[in-house]
Image (tube, rainbow, N blue to C red; front, side, top):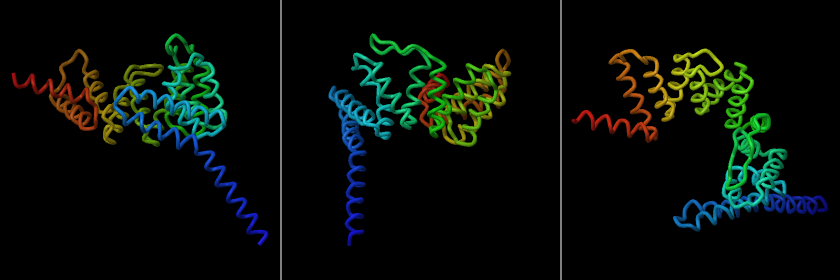
Length: 264
């Protein structure tokens, strides 16, 4: 009987800890849902209120709320008179284990970021450090950012190979596009259109519209200053169709203009 009483107390405490932990998530997500569904100026008010709730939870050390704050920080930053305080909240979140907090910090430090009259100055070493931390916590978008920044800064080919791995092994298509751009433009590596096309066609086959579109551009680039064979033109048209079908609006516009031109 004594054991059962102890067990009941333990279950009660565990339930209360879980409830306290989830409180900021529940309230914040309710506000966020309203912000996304209401078509009026109130949407901004709800969005800001959600960010404030997530920030409060993050300050209390709740990792899930730190993640949510990091993904919805912008309105709070815009409303803040001291964004350094908000950066400290993100830093606390990153230290506590919030991968999105690390990633957001890296994004903010990767370039001069102006928010109203306040500036977060570019700091590449900090950007690389925070992106690496987010990557170590398993966040693929942070791994992509880490390896991209490190490749640009350190010019070590191993980082480009890591980006390719994210593409082929993790199906992280932003990495396919990033690596392809490095190869196509010869950035810190030998220009290689074939490698770039291979990466983009891989992502295109997986229905990534942006990759299909960029593959069509590189096909044309290969024949810069030369006559483009009819077979290649047909392949470009097919890539644009795939891009359009997979949500790439610019490709749809190009195809529409092409049809209009054909009618004249």
